Length: 197
Image (cartoon, rainbow, N blue to C red; front, side, top):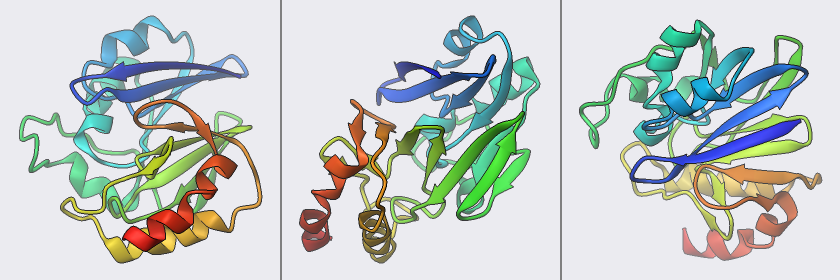
């Protein structure tokens, strides 16, 4: 597996291309991601959203059209793809597949696991492919996603953090912003975050 990463737009949102078994999966194509993605894929098979915030989904529709591949989005965030109170100019997109909660999918022979961790937004998820996890805006290196946005929920974030704390696997985490970290490294911070929320 090879992972390409490029921070996109004013919010430096990480767009990822996962190259595996001669295919590519695109994760969170944000603002300005279209040209970079097209230049770096030969056999793309899917676009995945960790969640629906505009800076992660801006280039969904352009890539759907240009690459003719399906878009997978967590069900709880589909309404965010059509309208953004922060960014009214968001190009609307419609997922081909609505991912409902914790779900394991097979995409062109590649196993993809969506892990639902609501709180930052209703559909907020981490995506596990092989030995790595793309944590979106649920977890960052030394931090977590905000819980004071529209559609955020502090109670859901607390429950999600408790769920994450119970995980017994350690894998690299590739977040929606900033540098990579690991499951175990971020589990050490959970008690701190639960005291704050």
